[in-house]
Image (cartoon, rainbow, N blue to C red; front, side, top):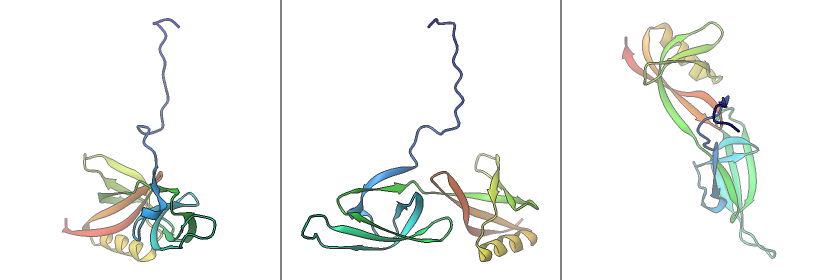
Length: 160
């Protein structure tokens, strides 16, 4: 290879950060997060069984998918590692709602974020639409995990 060759890499990925990290099943508690069937979930119930004749104590997780609200269950030996999603919450100011159901949000550095749809949760959807129609200054909380993002909460900061 000569020095004059240039290589251009098309990168769609982030800085190589993993979407999940391993954590021992026995240390995951209620209200924590866990990946079940490749979905990021919030743990609502954990029960641990005693070690049986052949070995491992087992953790039984009951969890709710943080994006679609589905209930999922998993049983894992307590000494084994589970994947735990990196869950981030970010607040953005709501600028606009388009006719096709997408929102326009203002980020902290002044850019706009236009790739998020309105939430599917009817009560939150109603609050956002009503508050926006009244001309209120709204701040939405966006939860992101494993490459998915969704509006999960709303704050009224007062009139514009």
